[in-house]
View 1 (spheres, rainbow, N blue to C red):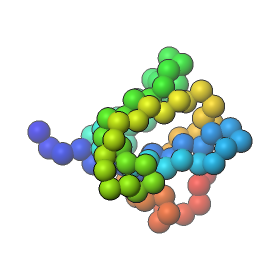
View 2: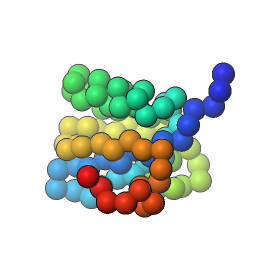
View 3: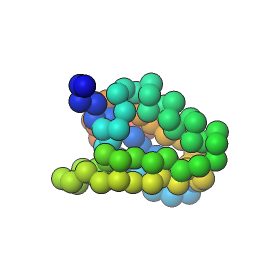
View 4: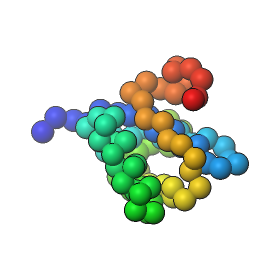
Length: 86
């Protein structure tokens, strides 16, 4: 089975600081967007098992509470290099 791509997920919460996570849980952008959309529709958190917060060296499991998230950006490019957040 091929290794999943590393995707950059950026979460923008209501009235808070943006959070960027590098994640290898998904095969591609579409799969990640579908998982985020399902979690939002179902009113639950997003579970990531292979994630790195703020470019840390080690992969960890994370639970992202989507209750106060306004938008999520999924990219194959590092956010710092991708330009302005939409």
